[in-house]
Amino acid sequence: MKKAAVVLLLLVAVMVMTPAAFAQGNAKAEKLPVSPTALVIAAGFGVAIAAVGGGLGRDASQRQPVRASPAIQARRAAFARP
Image (cartoon, rainbow, N blue to C red; front, side, top):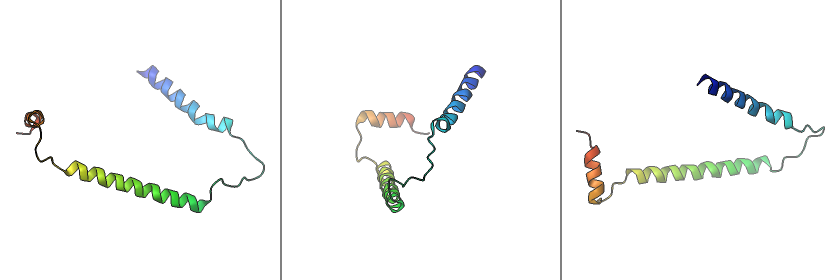
């Protein structure tokens, strides 16, 4: 177990150093590929979509079926708390 932890630690260390080793430094500052305003708007849409998905998932998890099949009813009865 200790050997696996050391190997994992070394792997993480290599993964942390790799981007710095292959980074390309330019003398002049490059223009951003996308305007910052577009990034803010895209992030807002992403958060909105995630919120809608979370709300739908929560709503669906709170619904109870009108009538479940006998197999599901038996399974629920087996795991019911006394």
